[in-house]
Amino acid sequence: MRFYHDLPPSKLRNALSRVQHWHIRFNNRLAKWVGGCVLCGRTTAEATLSSRLCAVCTEQLPHHLSSNLSDTNEFHRCVQCAHLLTTAETHCLACVTEPPAFTETLAFADYAEQLQHALLQYKFHNALHLAPMLADLLHHALLHYAHTHQPDVIVLVPQLDARTSERGFNPLRLLMQHIALSSIWGKTPPIYAPDALIRLHHERLQIHVKPDMRRKQVKNAFAVLDKALFENAHVLLIDDIITTGATLNEIAHVLKKSGARRVDNLVIARTRKTPLK
Image (cartoon, rainbow, N blue to C red; front, side, top):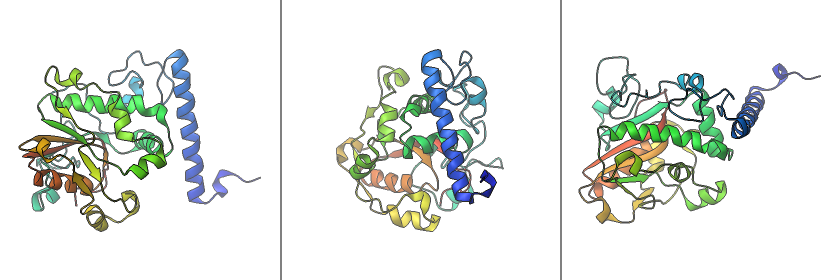
């Protein structure tokens, strides 16, 4: 009889990932009938950020934004790239020595633990049942951003049509379908332009390449369809995850060349490993 400790590390990780995915799907389906957290099945009566997450799982989200909209930097991140800082500075060394084209980045939480697993399952394993919960987290980050900012235009990091066909859905677009911008900015919401940017090429998934190759891969990978939309505009660029920031930086350059006066980023999760490079 073969036990789990006899499996190669890669197969063991895959097996554990499948088990966790099945567990989340079971709890989500159970929640549809009796109500409860999509991650653990507990009651969500005391939920604060999402009706689909219990208070316990919410608190376990790594370095997440609080329910206090006035507190946008509780864990002291770099203002520009959202990298966690260990000093009292406002910017990390990388952003000081080589400033990116964007001005600010707001991340809901760290890309780790349950949130990392949920995002991976949603994007790469068609776990669409997680979309409402992830949309709630994105909505909360937008509320934080709107507390102090009024952008003119909101755009999404685009994916290739071939990738959309392969996956069967566009992850960011699906999340945004759950969000009413008028409920965040009131009578004067920003222009939502999900088709304003296009992706021209995508050689490989960035998570599979070394950091020094990322900027080369995304160079000239994006284009603007309507430059007039961005003339002297404050643009908010939304993505699910920021790693090195190479993709967001390249898009910010494209938007600036098209006339944008400022570009900010808003993401669900920020990796812990490296600041912007």
